[in-house]
Length: 591
Image (cartoon, rainbow, N blue to C red):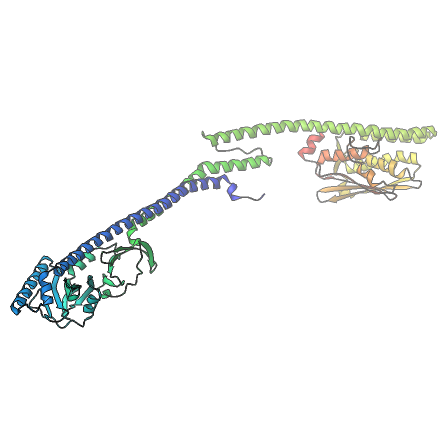
């Protein structure tokens, strides 16, 4: 039977300890890592989204403050009068109105320190330009891009991105600036009469946005309505088109094999604040949970292996050893005993096993004695069955000779019969030798020669070294008797019987062959079956069955009698048995 490793209780105990300890840890670790990652990611998303919302609120407030200050300019009556310049206005009055307008612009700048200057341009170029700072001179701006953009906005607020160069003076400022512009319409006609432009310091805005970070590499940026950078942590990106597609809502994005969370928030002016959140950095806590889980799982595996080895030594090995002892006991070795007889269940099992083996050995000894007596009784019964058969046939032959008044032959036959009966009395034991059996056959043939008038000849062939081999007494005579009565006697002509003894390794083969009438296969098949199954009547096959059963009783079922025959060609009977008589089985049966 093929050995299957999983059927071993040692392997099963080890697997139970290993799986029972590591599987829950791995499952719980995996679940806790996934759940914690999801919770951390959700919380990070909420915090990042809240941060973006707060930044958006601050930007809206900042831009609204600037936009509200521009409304003060739009609603100024003085600025309307300066830009419209009615014909009846004297130069003095115009100069006073310009002076008052500058004071208004200056007050606005004082209230909003981030405003560098405010410029008012006359679209008709009558009063050209004036600003809150009277010391600043401005070059011609009527053909500039920003001026055209303000006119096209038709009165709406126009925001201009961060730059290191002044929009109006076209010179380096030394600090970043951005702009706000609006067209000024006439209250009476609704036509555009002027252009207002705010140049605003961007330092405060940049400092506020630079402070917002997500991890080591996360950042925010601000884009205008054309998805160009108004603000970016890298100043070189100012005014450049954004490389990140602006999503409508928060979503995950993967760039350079790193997952990021992109969170957009729209400002009141149509711009967008976008947060780029690196999930790997912000979920570092869940990664630490994963690492802790790994070390806990590794420790659990080591502990499981240790407990498995301990369980194998304390439970598995004693059970395996007990199983091996049981197999030896099953194979017939009743001397085995278990050494594990402690106080636990395995020790109790060992003590029970030892007690069971002892009782089995005692029962087998008793059964062996009973079987020995039974076999001796069976052999005696077979002996008692064959002897009357032999006497019946022999006395019947002598009776016929007496009827024929062959007194000398009767005397010789009776003398020979006495010698045969003396040889069958078993005074020397159940076993004789092959040589003594062949001598008895020669005496037996003397009786048969009287009856059949010397028409039967017996030939024997036995090596000298096999003459002293032990053999049960009267084993060959029944076979020869059957060969005479059922094989040669029915013939009219003379017949022969040949006996050959051969050695086959540790076994012996005795072949008894006659040239009689033979028999059919149907008759051969019924020669050696039991009397309950046999349909034949009379004493035809008593001798064969006696020999076969005697051989099997002494030597085992591997030995016995085989018959080969063909009608008209004679019969061959082959007896095989072991050369060794000194076996416990034979000795117990032969006593």
